[in-house]
Length: 287
Image (spheres, rainbow, N blue to C red):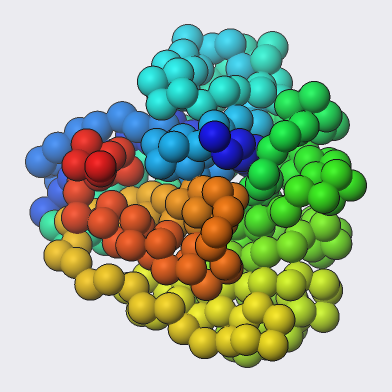
């Protein structure tokens, strides 16, 4: 069974389904209300585990009563936890998310500024035997430490590049694969071509840019092109990008699939997740 380490953000997401987003100084009634555990690395680790891998999540959770929601969710999906701040007693990271009938989202979140990461060094024992390490750029010191340790033992490092963050320039020195959103723009970059050049110049060997339902652009060595995304009836896009990253890490790490093939399989899984509400319901129909 393939093993993966996922380093980054964990949140508790309070999700409201609404007909339309509220206007300024207005109030709307929610059609649905749910509580999920989210965050890029967290959703990716759960997807990885669901598909058949052994996942370890490295994040800050703490000991507040609400932190039990995170621990329970990880236990449910067989994800091991390494807590970067086990003694933190205040409210953990919360996100408020509204999803309209077209599957569009509005998000308010405190991100990692809410909880400090005190254990920044990589756990070499936990890292041993891992086939892939994903870092999402949250808790940057921890991401850098785990990426350095992974590079030292020859384990591929995947960057979930959602947006540019302070410290990513240093992190890129130990990144092998970057899966970028269309919003990821390094300093001085204004186009996708410039993003590809920027990352290649810093030693990233395989790069992809996801663009929602549009084809995924990629460059790996001398090869470049696009990967089609299956078209589905979208119910909710929440977590789809994170699920893409977790699925990519799984298919890349099990062997027998090249970079482009792993992107193709990840696109299928992420598209399928959009047919369901929330970031977990797709798993109920997944064989």
